[in-house]
Length: 406
Image (cartoon, rainbow, N blue to C red; front, side):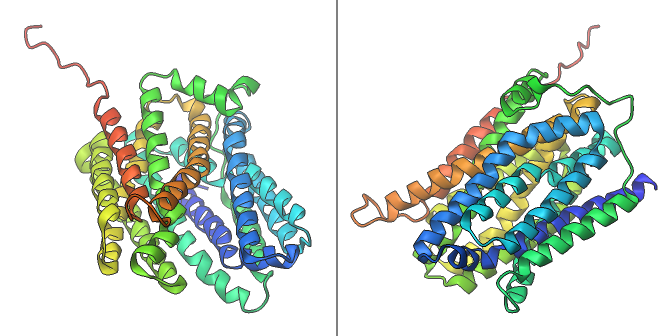
């Protein structure tokens, strides 16, 4: 199979995986209620535990899976992850206790290497100047899948509460079958590297990757941006309710608008903007757009304007693939999997930290007796983090100019 065919197969794998993740969102509260017999408030707490546990496992095991893919190849890691994810969805469909649900989410978190492995796969088969565009396509595939997943899950939930989990398991098996039939291995003997336990954990892998020239700063920018951008999933439903009086369908529709715009921007704008401004310039543009929209969300008072801002915020998503491309350029060919594992860990860490911080800030500025009623305060904090990221990004060393006298 040619690498030309590998690209659409990888993108469809990412999209189907995202659909599988989104399928289960609409019915998680009902499933938790059915196995605990408690209240909705208690179900929300358990939902937080399940989500945090998933992210913690991603943080801990992302580098290990990246290192394994550098040693044994992208194909076996991707296929193994899909098989375990399918088994995890089946376990969730059959679970009759909350503890079994928790175990299934922890296992799924450990095996959730599909996105990072797919990105490393594309890095293997892409010239450095093409990586940013293809990383944007991965983001687009995930975005479209994430929008479609909840919609399909809501339809399946009308059949049975556990039907979405069986649907997610089926999609993972379809993913597995297609990938097994057509995906080649991209790790050759030239770029294969030994597996090392010291680099197969978040601390060791981050230390090793950070020693590469320029990567410590890039990773810091990536981490700050990840925390800032996680403000959206962390507080958007609460923000929409408090600021605009939106109900659940309207909140869902607003998230769909963002997801569709994000997918379109990743698919159609990332490549041309990187070609026009370069990877560093595109990252600067994306950070500036992000700062502007986060600041605007801090003070916006009309719902229609918030919807318009989501379009601009989606375009600002070009920062991530641009930063990924810069980091990929600075990383040896035999460490692309390790790099993607580190980036996955940093993103998982942001998914752990951001909800705790952003919801606490939201509560502080919306609770009775608050110094100022400002539901958008978490967005202003996120804007501040993005400003720090931009300052670090602009402080990067510039290439030396040739001496005209030599």
